Length: 109
Length: 114
Image (tube, rainbow over all chains, first blue to last red; front, top):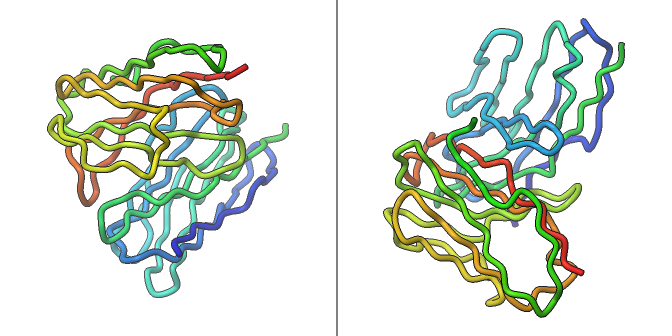
């Protein structure tokens, strides 16, 4: 079966760095997405990786290793507004998005 | 404003009621999606429409009936729902189905079945 694993919840301190991991087992691979979802709001796109390596976008970076079935989202200089759920999703060989259950990130002052 | 608008934002309905959820996208996209989001569970894809044609139905019970009259509008008709259908229903759109096509989501309809 297809499976996406990510931690259920993480806590970090304002100003610090946090890494949210995602491992996947899917039928084929056509890219990996990270989305941010604040409580009661729409998920919003953060990043897309289809080749191995690190993609940096401001305070957020996303890394992919296809051989290991592994990705992480790195958030630097954490701000209180970064408190949200972070969703990992993989596009399989049928171009279907397979979603993880999300990681709830709690930022403390 | 995400470009994808869903109404209503909240809905409470009895198990014998009939109601409809509406989604509208202003992005010129060709693919639209219905997802179900339950607490602490992965997003569940329900239906996909590409160029107004239904391309995916993920074994969704017939008490959920989608309708896509044009590329900008998507409806989800609900009837005789069960309490376990209570969830957040998200609509999304993308340029098309396929590699690297980022999905844009609406804010969802929080549905409670009583």
